Amino acid sequence: MGGQAVMEGKAHKLGDHVNTDLIIPATHLVSNDPAELGKYLMAGHDPDFVNRVEQGDILVAGDNFGSGSSREHAPLAIKGGGISCVIARSYARIFYRNAVNVGLPLVESPEAADAISEGDRVRVDLAAGKVEDLTTGKSFSVAPYPEFMQRIMDAGGLIAYVKQQS
Amino acid sequence: MSQTRKILAQHAGRETLEPGEFVEVPVDLVLANDITAPLAIEEFGKLGRKSVFDRDKVVMVLDHFTPNRDIASADQCAYVRQFALKQKLSHFYDGGNVGIEHVLLPEEGLIEPGMVVVGADSHTCTYGALGCFSTGMGSTDIAAAMATGKTWLKVPEAVLVKLTGRPHRWVGGKDLILHLIGLLGVDGATYRSLEFDGPGVTNVSVEGRLTVANMVIEAGAKNGIFPADNLAILYLAAAGVKATASGIEPDQYGYVDQIDIDLSSLEPQVALPSLPSNAVAVTRAPHVKLDQVVIGSCTNGRLEDLRLAAEVLRGKRVAPEVRLIIIPGSRKVYRKSMEEGLFDIFLDAGAIISPPTCGPCLGGHMGVLAAGEKAISTTNRNFVGRMGHRTSEVYLSNPAVAAASAVTGTITDPGEII
Image (tube, rainbow over all chains, first blue to last red; front, top):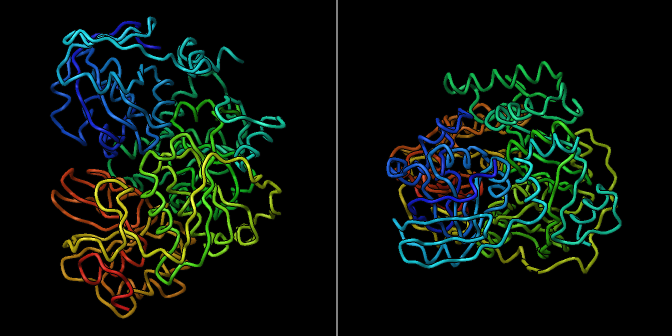
């Protein structure tokens, strides 16, 4: 559930403050199915966005990614839309928690987020703590998750973690 | 320690807590709605528990796409209803009992000072107005809390917002929070708690404080909190809660930062598209032609808000080609508005009166915007496409500014027409 240890795909660049209404507009929140939600990935920003995403691609965003509502449908839509990982300068609090809970890997790296360009080929190795821009040859080291959250990831998500604890 | 840390420490059974620590705490109330509950129920099912940890402490409110917007939302409500009835939840709000959750829960007497409240809705932070810790989470976190009665939290750093002065006539909680978000930016308080105190607090009504705490999430804050003072105790007593001041007061040194706001210096605020942080004084807002005005929501759908709108609308008419939609936030607000004659004022002005629902705030139903349309709204988010088409635009304001703008058809300072 923690996602693949190594992910590789094309970068889709987004700006600052990408909120959950842009990621998936509220009108589509009538399903819990990632594949269904994925059809509307970034529809609030550009309804055609999802058609440019290939399985495994990577979102690269600015500050405060995932701000706004608490809808867990946002990380589900990102996964369902084919995105393997998000790299951002920073994340909104609830989104970060939700992504851990549903097993969407997040990388917080201002350096990587700034340096990677639209369409670059990007590889993320979570275990090694490394992001590589294969197009430019630049690489970036990534701080690990806080230990407590890593335990949830290692358990396979929050539900599995709670089961383990009881 | 800050007020938030004290509440969390008390729940964690600890003398002190440091910001940044991860702690597990028991929760006093767990909330979900018709959008977030289905996913929470599904995840709850995976835990293999027969029942929720306490049927008196798990609250479900069908308020977002109700009265059912379409078959898909009706199916979601039916799924939640089935669960709530099977679990015999004491506080399940459906049909005629529905109110907008954050208007409803305090009014129903479910919120008390010193509590820890978690909800699968980002505006769960509203309840901090009554001296408790409350915060929004996702459905899976809520599923775990429903099952175990506990949640984990990262202890936030706290920022003191010190209020002084008395606000002018058309200035209230909404203007204070829009101004503050403008100062902080939409991520200026991320992971932090915003704690309101100072001699000016007493000049902000409890309903105004609910509006303020409601929108702290728009600056990224984990929670917002007011002291449970005499005004709060009176409000709670009216809701049937026999609260004494919680005894949980902040120390002077628990803060990483302090922001001073003189309420008497504030003008009514308007947040321009497309971030709540784009706050300007109403007199500096552009004179755009409005298509729709919405007065309601978990931010400004309380009786005081509707009274304020009525004060402006009395004897006036909504401008031609402007749709004014007024949404009382709960059945109690609805009934009182009717009894006080506010509905006559609204209907005479040409307004539409909606049943309690989140509806148009999130572009759900009951007033979705067409391409290119412009609205002023007392809701909490003016993001791109928030209330409808992605080329539509939303301006945020208090109910008096929204009402005055409905009359003139453009963004207007109520002082200009009263």
